Image (cartoon, rainbow, N blue to C red; front, side, top):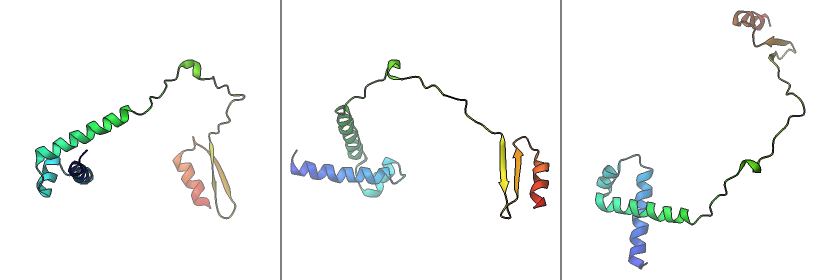
Length: 112
């Protein structure tokens, strides 16, 4: 690639990066920067094609077959609890079920 072309590419890629973070449409951004909209679109397309080629050169990920996975067997049932605790600074602990009605919980909280 010629030096002038490299410089132009760097200039246009810089503009593309500026546009992508600007929140403006391509057309509005080009108007503000004094760049031809058609030229800008050309460079956006060229950059996308270049990035697509680069991504094609990346190694392909191997797909996993079901034989790749080993079954997971739990040795015991997980211990779940339907309770929760409210611990006050003075050491009082209130243990409640998730089925506790809000009115009851409000009364318990106001006691301490």
